[in-house]
Length: 583
Ligand SMILES: [Zn+2]
Image (tube, rainbow, N blue to C red; front, side, top):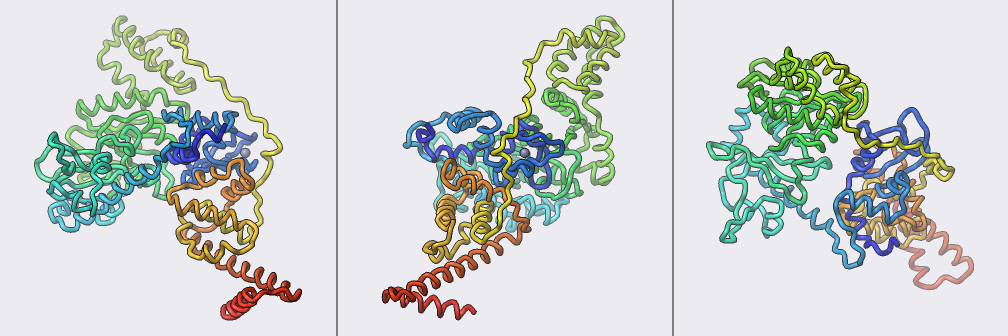
């Protein structure tokens, strides 16, 4: 029974989940503007009309009207009941589902951690103004004020107690949790980052999750990163991805570099399709995230031995992801060069050429394997085959895989069909049958935009508007259809300022008007971002007037019957004079 799972847990679960990832694992998505799209899994179509909004955490199909949040999607797509969908989602995240109302919501705690990191970042940014040394460093690296501001670069002064200066009441436990403080064996807390240029790391939603810090002077280590924390996971975050996504520009490829400064220098030279790993090797999650945006990923490594080894590790992570249409390429910088020296000496065009001519995965694959093999000898050929096969067998079926096997057969003079024959069989994944579109799905989201609907829709789609709803006490008593829903929504969003559209909707699942709210959440209001707040406030004013007119009419009708009480007379008087004032 749904009632056995605490609502707070469900809200929490939705907050911790990214609908884009959940859907993408089942229906591969492509970036399209600020949203993601695919051919709809719920009806038959050739051109994509199914969109997923990372901001609203909500999906919607313009073709058949299917819409909902991540739980709705699992219920529809995996054909699950509500409880099963919640359990599936929780299991995928490795979170046990609590069965008692005693569950303590985790979301506010998490949010608090994000806020702490953001505040620390603001503090470091301020401190940068006061440090000539840090500003000189950034200037010498050629970074402009615009880039410094965009990436919110700051400076951690050479103190042991920056965090105490930054926070009025330093919440030591939480600062330890996000890795800004360290505790020594005498139980004394001190700052992790001292005398370092600070690069804040933002997650895909733009939340501040951690830092990279580069030492000024000769200290070690040269680069220091935030540790793994409840909100920062190096294996899935990429430095610069949020900033790249903010560029309203279509990229045909993404470039992965190894360091913060490499990325910033490239950004300074106009290369905005760049991300950096955070002191770790590239992971499967990193690549899955990038291939959601582009078909081509270009790795940029130093040309030295360490660089080549890192590149080989990256290639191996790529292989299982190399479905047809995806490309991976490798740049090896000349020994002793980094993007900074290269750009300064040879300019942006030189790097553009490197990206364009980067070595394809197939070429690097065989070049690397052949390094240790005498390809002329029979022995060497057999060895090449035995090295290559376990790697190739990890690739998804398709033309690209076949091509690599054919190449292997050329080198080894072994028959490619035979080479492939002895592959360890992969678990077959049956292709999912097209879902029948049933009638109830054939509801389009045609909404006649009455002021009440506009107010509810805008609030649902932009929950942060709740805090701008200053006239709620005037609105609440008005007897307008839908007002009770609106008031509940405002209340919910004001008490939980971090709820997304998806989380708000969850409160109406299986309730009266639930369907109606899902429809309003999917409604395309066509307003530019900058116009949303103004439209919302105008609509509220309009509603207030509408309500007053209703009230006047009701009271006048009552007056005609001669049954108007004294207080009602006074109310009528004030309402009429009020509307006259406003003309
Ligand atoms: Zn559809």
